[in-house]
Image 1 (cartoon, rainbow, N blue to C red):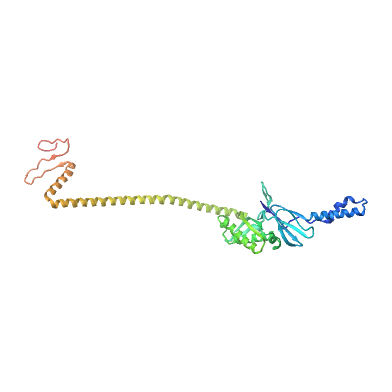
Image 2: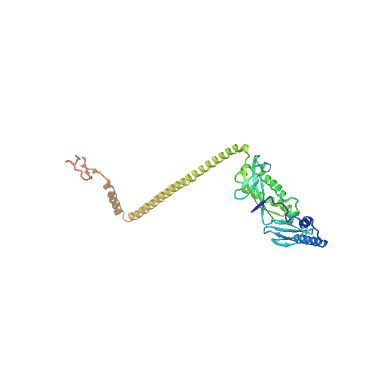
Amino acid sequence: MAAQGWPPGGGRPPVDIRDLIERFLGPLRGRRVPFGGIGGIVVLVLAVVLLWSSWFTVQPEETGVVQRFGKVVRTEGPGLHFKIPYGVETVRLIPTARVLKEEFGFRTEVPGRRTRFSARQFLNESLMLTGDLNVIDVDWIVQYRIDDPGKFLFRVREPVDTIRDVSEAVMRQVVGNRLGSDVLTVGREAVQEEVKIEMQKILTTYETGIRITSVKLQDVTPPDPVKPAFNEVNEARQDRERTINQAQEQANREIPKARGEAGRTIAQAEGFALERVNRAKGEANRFQAILAQYRRFPEVTRKRLYLEALTTILPAAKSLYIVDADQKALIPWLSLESGVKQAPGGMKP
């Protein structure tokens, strides 16, 4: 659990001896008591005071710093401990096991299940100038732990105020080195980490005994007078991003499609080229084989080629004309079409 507003000190308040004496001697006023009885009461009161101031209790999340006449002599962990009675040793309890926090730009009035924040605006803390000369309202939290109680108590006069001053100075520096749109949108994590590192460097240099655990940006918004214009700018940016995404989506859809079609065309062309090459090679091999046979048996090969050509041509022929050089008149033609009757004299009806 984080604690807020913890004072840089602690321990049981000193015992007032006169107050204790008054408590014990009050009922005896107005009564006649022998001198010996009064001395015994005084001795008893002194014994109670010494006993009361000779012990102290350290809670589980605390560390007790024991001072003897103002000088730190030792530290004590959780539990019951004893010290030299009142006036010699004093104890200051430091919450070293708790995570403390400081709030900037807002305040938590009622922490718990239903946390209530202050309605007051702390613009002197939250208004900052960005690197592009824009003003933004930054609310953030710094969480820290006390690692060295001695340094925390005696190296810096006001350690909590020091944390607040250092945090505000570093945050203004980091925000001032960035664009306002960066701080408002994508640069929040980077701002938090950079502020944490720079704060730790400064606090270590000051020997405060403090370790920064986290820096969290709660709310980063433009000031109220410029919020409408800022919203319009955001809408324009969102429209731009939407248009870019739509164009990218269309490109992602069309480019693979075009690449697929190009690949298919190339594959078809390669297949056609391979087919033509193989066919040409087959025809060439066939021609070479026929040529070899022709050189060996020219007359037989010539007749065979002639007959093969006729078997290929005649089935596709519809009409056949026979021309004889010695014939003077036109020779009647023979129709090769099935089912066609010829007229007398060799003419088609």
